[in-house]
Length: 274
Image (cartoon, rainbow, N blue to C red; front, top):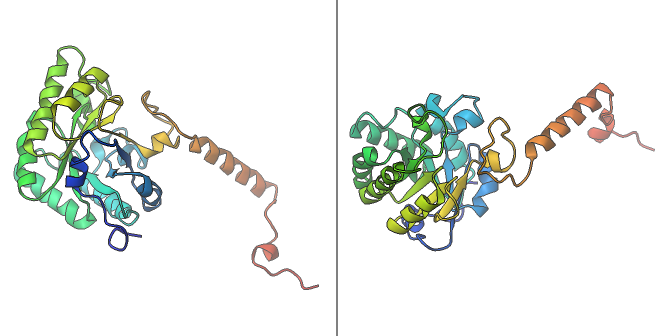
């Protein structure tokens, strides 16, 4: 089912209005079946560039292309009715100029029917966010640990400790003042997340940033226990579907080798008449 045939989807202004109210529930999705599963429970569904690592086996998000994001965005769109759909702008698709950012964001919105895009970066991206917002492109910002800049950070490390806290706070203030309707805070200390959440007027959505935020987001494969190669310490695994799937596949393999399938006549209803 799609949003065009069902319940009206949430909008960026409605998400922004949730500041300080009931926490926002957010998850990633990359496929239609997962989108259908998360939609009844989520306020925001992000088609994250984490798809490159989770589904395509890439070592980081840097190899993700605009075409990949559009393809997965189209798949997720078919599975959503209620949740606000946001699509990540991949590395290299918005940093060069305001014009590049608008052209690519407009393409993503037109081809996926998403409600908003997400950009990584704080003060350095404030003018771009303002440019997009003024032209009808709702933007979710992302500060703290920004995975597209992982090489500059020297790895997936906690950001905002010590003197670095002021930089991230300035980043959050800058994107809020530029017109972002919400901001993801990734991998920062709780005290900093709390301070930012209290200072800025837009919702903060944490990932490894403590419950002090206005909402939380996780990679759905992480919280379902499907993605085992990388286990963030801040992720609560609500089930271990990867282990269950592995056991099921092993059982299937055993049944095939032991010829334990039902006979064909039983499967297709051709039982002999008595």
